[in-house]
Image (cartoon, rainbow, N blue to C red; front, side, top):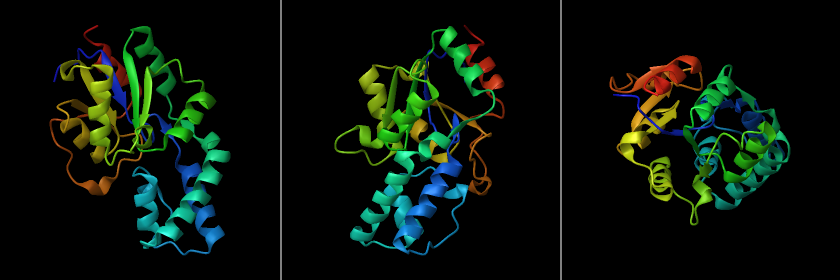
Length: 220
């Protein structure tokens, strides 16, 4: 798998930033406000999938009225101020600066909703890094999978598969890349779930942003 990439699509949570404390606090607040007992602990394992499937899993309910109420409570907490608690993983901004200096085109593809995603970009002053930021609900109607989101990014931005790489921390990210014929690099400094089993041998793995930067810029 040659580097020689000029376009990089990033997952956000667990790859570039750590939103775990703010997300989990917002879930806890929503469930507490509505007096709902969660079916499992609020741990990092619940971070990553879209909001509504996560609420279904945590509540064990298919009651749309309840789920919508939980979603509204979560959004009020997270969109109001919780998003500001997101922290940047060590070495990420230096890594992004390197890619920007070498004129790499960078994009975000996240399961997080587009509103708090844009707020995080503004809060971190990260607008300069990314040509475009995408989320499932960026599109109308909202997309159902990250794989479809990556498909739309490639099409909307006119990106070639051979010059594009997807970078994330979840099996879902790797499968989304493969479903679009993209090379994939998995980072292990985020929310990687050790229970997922063996990671495909043809996926790249990086434990430090600096090493990933070295790989991406090796042929430039």
